[in-house]
Image 1 (cartoon, rainbow, N blue to C red):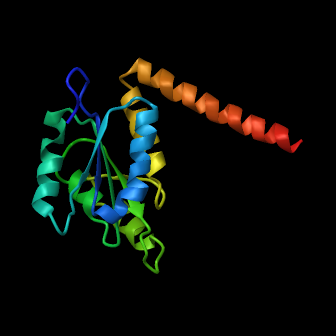
Image 2: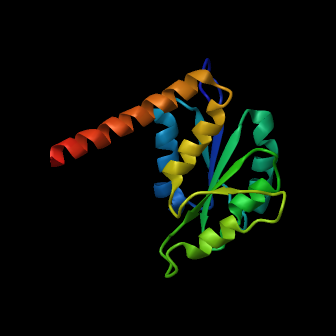
Length: 167
């Protein structure tokens, strides 16, 4: 819950299990660097389906504007969220410790029926999920748009500096 005087979370980060926290925590770090309030929760589409459903159904009324959902293996969490809310949902397929290297999670996340989209980033791409969430929010927040643009300029400057060191 947000501290008194602070605005509530705009992005909900949901993971299927505690083992997903190392990757999904990266989304929280990016959002914090852009001063975008977020919350992080565990709600499994399979182990705690009612919790996942309630989370998705109540997210908008609690001020959440974008959901980032990440799970591995049978990665139905993002799809379950998308089927239960009108908010944009960004899926993060997770590689975990499985032999398929996250391809199973990628296919589970990206294959959605018409009308129930899940924007899907790369396997273990929680950082890009956060950047996409920030860009979505920046459409209606000029101050955030400025912060995102500044961060992009800093990335370009770092790449230029690295190139300069190679010369």
